[in-house]
Image (cartoon, rainbow, N blue to C red; front, side, top):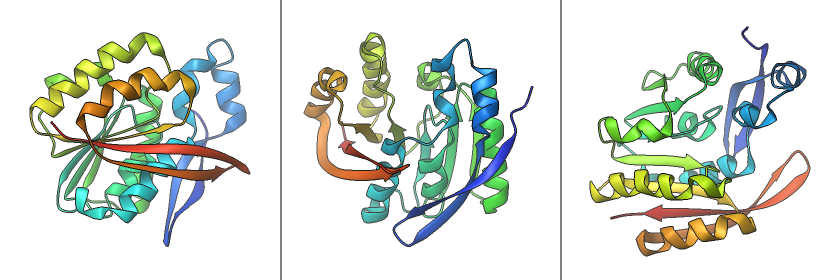
Length: 205
């Protein structure tokens, strides 16, 4: 059953984006038995941090083909579409894709599309110029598989921009990224009256 959606504004420096997000009460009811499956249904600080980084460093995505993996509500991809040549925003959850498509239509983005895809299958797709990910490294059990996917893109000369909250569990994964890191940004993101430290890493093979 489709979730009720509502528009919610986000401000990235002087850019204001209204995107569709699911109704909180509806999400709680739908995912009452599996809260982890509902991670896609809200905007997390790391995605806002990634948007701020892209705003400050637009040269990474200007006139480029961009793909966002495990996008959830797709805020970074939607923001990137204001500067990039073409953006494909992906998530494995069908309802996430529906939500992103509503946002694309609302924002009248002619250069963006949303597609259902698990990040594990990304190696089977055409190579973009830039790959975006935010807050995907929350489960240590997937670190090695996620790194294999990232290395596939890095070995094919794709620039990866990945953001993560500064949490202890992420440190082993961050250490795996550092040999490829060409730029790092650290900042504070305020969301729902809470401040979260966020790091963004630019990776190149």
